[in-house]
Image (cartoon, rainbow over all chains, first blue to last red):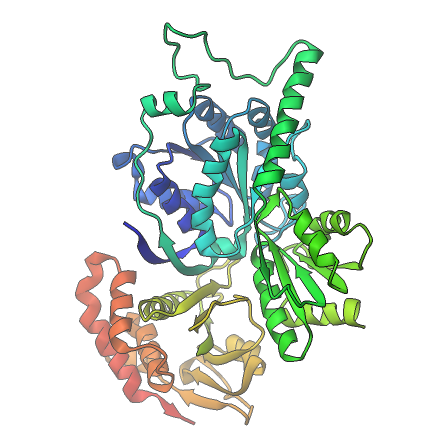
Length: 359
Length: 180
């Protein structure tokens, strides 16, 4: 049954994972996302659904446990925050190359280095452009509410299985620590091994007599074989870009100025838009929900009518590069960002819009 | 209707819990709510605050620059948030926590000596519920019955025997709050 609760974003992820029928969570604690594992440990799903919850000895171990579980067709996940996600990159690249589904959550904090524990979006490049080595992409989802934290667990897993590729949720300390109303989905039973064999014929769940053994690997000894793997991956990413773009456009139809922002700071931009509209400025907000695939076509459409775009991020300016690529010089694309864990207010965003675009 | 409320005081005073009960009550009354704590490397005795927004419509920014209502339970909080109250807004304070009263003339100030009342009632832990009672008297943004339901949802079941004590504390708060 559906259930309404007041929850933190991190808690919502844990609850949603159990309700999705997740088979295993492997993680290592780090602020500001420790409540994900804490909530799972408190709820003890191994006693109810049979879901494994394990604190690994490091982030590197955790992602490789995910690799193993994913190879068996299990719905497995890990979560961490920026420095911990850097440690996972090698494993993520292997999983992407082996074409296995899994869910990775990054509740970002200020960086670089060990940084701060306050909110940041400075891992955009890492999440969207690859992060680890080699030509691979992740499906990247950016929730901006606690409800979306819960919803994107199922969405992330579903897309990961549909395309046999890792999905990543990137949030930050605001969404992770904030409490809001959440409608939790009904419980779904975990898939049985027979169901997995049926739905995931590639899963390494033991070889029956009637087929060859399944192999999951990221290693090829011949260059041509590795190129074939790469071509297969690229074809898949193209299909993802054609079919899976998601965004929210608010008041964009008549907008002279468009604020483009994702995650927590998109909420701040919505408030800036409300204040600006009261002053007579025609402002809209475009909130990319999938950061990969990026809503390039929507931005091109907006650029035909708007006078200018202000991209707002909790970073030195990362997504703005993709916005500029989409717009390709047809209208001005300016940037405003704060770094290291500092979050600008709606008034600051509006002031920047006026300074940089309205003039 | 939209109310933007900040509750600030010392860590350990029950500031975050009070906000949580308020937010849960709002949710049970069918409102949109956000509860945004100041989070950081906090410790007991340091300052803590939480922003609670209750609204009939979808809530945009959970980060605010000004507030309709501020419950300020120590001097650092009063110093920090007095300039951030909207004109015509409200400060609720406990005179035990502060060394000066607010200076602004364009806002309403209410005093609730909850620390003293909690000690008199021999249950210092009900301090935050007394303050919450005061808030509900001045800003009846949620119904008492929903607050009690919210409390029931927030308290672990083993503490449900304390519900009447908490209701009493809310009542005390409603009785002792007064404008200054």
